[in-house]
Image (cartoon, rainbow, N blue to C red; front, side, top):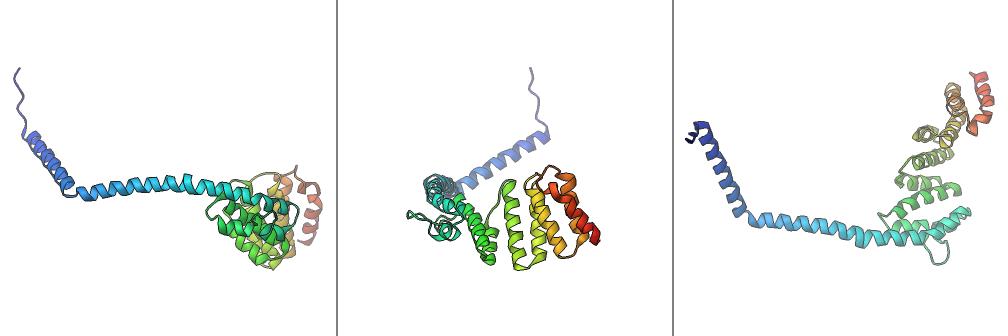
Length: 230
């Protein structure tokens, strides 16, 4: 069977492919040290990541969690000052957990506890700083974080900021626990500002969206109260 003759286009393509191959081989030969260095750097980078994670961060996470349990116990007993700096048994308080175990989940959680503790102690500016540094994840914790920030700003008399954070807390998750709770706080704050239409809207939302919540049980009287002032 006779061989087909290559077309001019096929011959040109073969020439181009051979040229590209030669260029690639030439690049590898002339840059072999650079390529080897990049491969070594990549291996070191990957190895460094796993070493950091499994040889440094995981043991640090475990130690931080073990250190924090006593502070959590004091917090649950409303012993906020002790929980922050001196929980007992030579264990670390939330402030030391944050400084001694940076980057860990325990340190992040300690920001939440520290913010809540300072809020309960009436140190609102410090509470705000700690709460803002807390990286809230999931559905419930963003609502709790923003709700406490709303409380702190409300106590400071910064009502606009309080309204903003109560709104964020109320809208963080659609449930019968946190959403109506912060909607009620929002309504009360609007009443304090004599913004009765927005207060009514917050109360109405509790009545219509969360009829089984604790707040809904007595919401009619609050709706009637603001309606009389509109």
